[in-house]
Amino acid sequence: MNRDPAGTLQETAEAAEEAALIARIAGGERHLYGALVDRYQRRLWWSCLRMLGDADEADEVVQESFVRAWERLGGFDPAHRFYPWLFTIARNRCLNALRRRRTWGFLSLSSGDDPPVLASREETAARAEDAELARALEECMEDLPDDQREAFELRHGEGFRYAEIAAALEVPEGTVMSRLYRARERMRDCLEGKGVTP
Amino acid sequence: MTDGRGHVEERLDAYRTGDLDAADRARVEAHLAECEHCRTELAAVESWAAAFERGLAARRAGAVGLEPDWAAQRAAIVARTSAPGRAEERRAFWRWAPQVALVAVAAIVIGVVWREAGREPVRVEAPGESRGESRPEAAPPELERRRADAAAGAPTGADEVGRTAGREQAEALDQARPAAPPTADDRRAEEKAAEPQREAEGFEEEQAGNEAALADRAAQPAAAATVLELDRFERQARAALAARDTLAARRALALWSDTLAAGEDLDDAGPAFLADSLEALLESAE
Image (tube, rainbow over all chains, first blue to last red; front, side, top):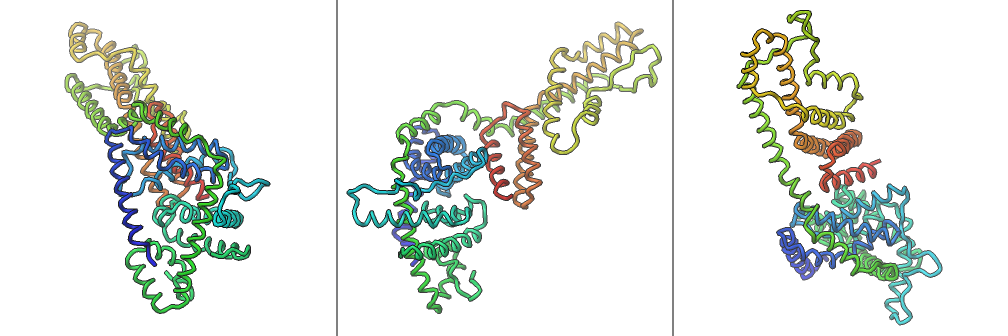
């Protein structure tokens, strides 16, 4: 049940393509940086939105982070994936923003009368089921401690590898493993309590 | 790698995604071969991971109404990264800073040695020690004065080191500008022409030469010295963090910030980024 070999090959090919792209940008082809922005701006904005709870502030942090990553691109190690590195830059900026305002802006999409997680009327039954799952997931995640929730989101929401989570959170991989194990156990208990099964 | 019952549940997700090293993976596989409970658990981990990922993706799709104008965001980023300017200047500065610092220090050393070789040894005596009552009382040499200022006026403690260094460099620069130091030839010519007054006037000239040389030495490598200090504080901060010594890391960070503040031109993305990172890490460690 290890990672699908085809998936691993595809991931390796994508990483190689991305490393080549970054090498060209670092080599002076500045106009190519837009391709990296296209690739990751939505994903990064979402992560920042989750941390900050403010769409405009998330937008600002995304812009600042891409600019900062650009300035530091010469120091990027192409042996690693770009996005986790970019995310680490953005996370630090989000933490700084939170420290300035002294509140944690965890955005919950499951509260309120008209949660944006609701899909359109034309959605399929499968999508409705996913939306229900998303709502339950959201509620259960709110009960997780911050450190477990962050590791859980990076692993299952962002698809980070364990080493990448460890680097982003600046903790040992063993700590990541423990946090994720505890988070998953709690999430399973919580979701099963809501009648959700995988 | 196992829990108290000898199972490997904590490792199963990393195992299924290929995130374990070879030795760990071999141990998990050996355990799975013998443990029905963990094989069942592995299947459950797989199913739940798929559910988590599906649910988190759906949640993200649900935020469509909150999204910014992607094209505008992209355009803003590209505009800020396309124009050659401050970003490249910063990169260029930090790429060459160590070499510039070395060259500056070498040039100053050579200059001082050359200057000293071209004239008689400088004799600095305490006021009134041997030159008679009539000689006006001389100020102490600049270096001594700055040391005295630092000892008397500067706040104590490591936190003030960077700030004091910056202030001293700025003072030295100001003092160096008005009066260029006399050359060795000038000095020798004056000595011959005014032998009778040598005791009175020559001393003051030597004194002025001393002060100017010291001021030059302090002023010219100001940027280089600041770069070296930043580098030192960064190493200290990183070492302290590696040792989980939060207090020492915070102290190094404070020195670093002070040094950055003292050298406005050095407000670079590199140190600022690391400072952000250190601050965030320190915050999370508390």
